[in-house]
Image (cartoon, one colour):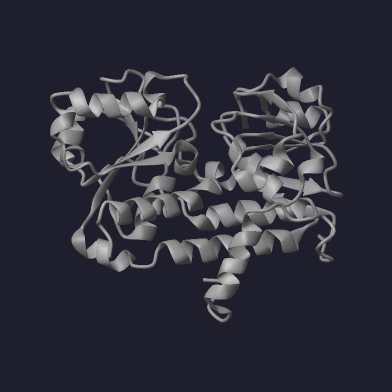
Length: 346
């Protein structure tokens, strides 16, 4: 932890700072250029800070806003939910190119010198939804993909969300924050954001040992292509698994896939103590609607008999917090509070 010598009061102070974009003139420290950053099996070089960035993925956008870089953002894409209140003012003026993945030409029209992507499926070595590394290189545009994606052992296996051979952790989140801060020449802001997140995690995980002793088991339900069909639930190595580990609870799904499709007969056999329901504004799939999730759990002859359903142990969590982003830190807080509310913590 970063705050062991400064105590809870400093932790709370950093928590407040973490939720607000940091003014650009606050820090004197800067990056020595040229800067080289290893990223997805290549090395990217920056001769100076980018001036015009397109961020593809809400998670990446929120990191840039948290680092006080709103004025450099000339385009954004892929949105699941409104910005959190502390970032709403800074983010209200950022242009939105597309709610989902934008076209390559749409990105070029913003005349960026840097494109940062949350998902490897959008900017990749070979085929990609937006463009390949080489396509952007041809226009002199630097590209960066979240280290959380680069760390996948297979980018698109299974349901299409990829597979991990090693668990995601906040180390990868901290790396993304630190690298983006270095690229833009504001490393001290990155260090402060990392420290503030550590303080939030430390506060949210107080009392986790008691949960571990009770062997509380959890299922994370993101969405479903058909509400009564198989469900996209969290595998054992993604951000929800990290949330579970932070709080000392057990993820019942043991797949290496990020979001495997699992049937309710199988989930019934696993019979979790708690089901976490993803909430989002997106309505691409029938299972995106949390009200539809609840209605199914109450009426389906198999799902309604789950221990978590019969006990009312259903906790709503923004789906964005189930992704490996800053919101995963929020997820620790949401689940911690939810477990307390249903009486599973002291």
